Length: 248
Figure (cartoon, rainbow, N blue to C red):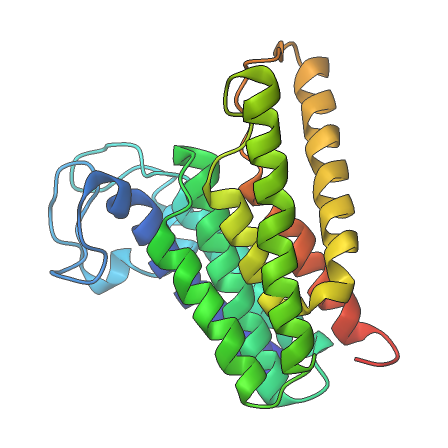
């Protein structure tokens, strides 16, 4: 029942995450006003706000204007539900499950924003950073000192790489938000797990680049591929593994 509750709550959070991803880059608030169609702006009734099912029943088309419903809505809802369920299933107690679910949902928001808009908002990364400190101060593992070291090391590691690449090649090879995100991840996981996160993120990025090449998309030295989603995936995977392990 707890896992089902986590999944249901995650689907609801996922719906809100999708609204953030669609509206925030356009300068629109995700919390003010009634829910409205992204295409024509018509107000949406309760029957059209049921996560996942509304999209499926309407076959991806808005009933008000027949416009295409952004697929980020069902994607965020399904991923949000999965995060909520896995957090409950993997964590040894409820406080860690709640913290882990929030960690995953914020990572999901950042990943989708970076994937679609090449943008890791400072305000959202700062919120993840402060939440990592807060969870540490509340006494949840890892130790607060490990978290603080992880935050500093995570940020400096990627910031050195970013600046070094720009110095050597004369152009940016990594966005300024990636070091901040990795620092925030360090504040959640501690410094000991950062190498695993970075390795997993790099391997996921290489696998994605290979897959894109196989389907015909050419990637060159100037091709853009956001690193934030891979950092988020690596961090969430490591958190799940740490919670589900013998010492979790």
